[in-house]
Length: 426
Image (cartoon, rainbow, N blue to C red; front, side, top):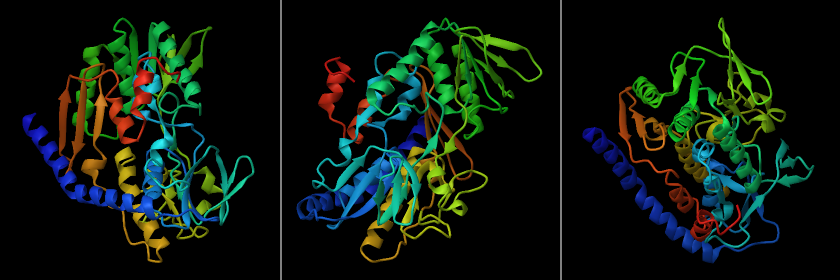
């Protein structure tokens, strides 16, 4: 345990040592950029589709570095950045859900006026030099970046685009969970495991069943973590059923039934689906179908993160969960890819070739912080040789340190405080 913590701190220290000079150099350049950038009448657009982790971070870096004559536009229908890490907790815990929605103002904080715009819309299709919105409007681009992520069922991702409606969506889950006696969570990835554990932790009298199609829960992670999570779920009183892909049937009003393979139909008061992800590559599929993987639905990219297709140009990139890479489908991997895309965009804008390439750091990018109830958690990572390290803890916070996310994404902490104290409507 102690050695594992020391090893993790060592990894983090090396990461900070390697990146701290880059961070402070970027801060200096950003300061100079603020005072030298000039807005011109018809700037060239660097267009980003998607405003989740990858889209947000890339837009922020570009807003603090693009030269005069260019600006960054982000097409994203959501009014606020969705901090999805906290969605499982806030689908159970009442009264905190508004903290999961952080204003996008952090993208352009301390950046030149006019260099960034948030386009509240959905992209419908792509043309050689423009993106067509659902409204029919064409938004021209000089460079295009797909950061569209993947679709998941609520509450992992939400349907609402406005913060108030999104809060109401999470509140709906909270009330259904509060009022249900028997709850089934279908799908035992990280989201399903966290929701099942939270329900039993906050409502210990409820019967919770976690159902997974495979033989092991948390299939994207290592066997030691899987076994650790099973033991923790067992101590909480969560029934774990593996090797089953039940059909969700509608029962009486307010009831749901699960049809298990070669088994009985079981009735639950509430069923929460937490299965699978679907890459949001449809916006590219019509324009360049050869650039979308037939097997995974993700966008094919070169090591430079440029889209690989006959119909696409070198000025088109993809990153994050929508991109087909050898890296894990995790936010840390997306943020690592941001640095590659940003470096290549800046090089091309300055007339040079895109040379930066993405090489996954599986230990850092594939690590996981998993909550296992109100207080318990575990940090997990795996070396390239397959050796696993688990660092458990029992000092978790109800809000999962969400104030740190607000600071990182540039949210106004006064607004955060007012939301926390009920002095501001979500």
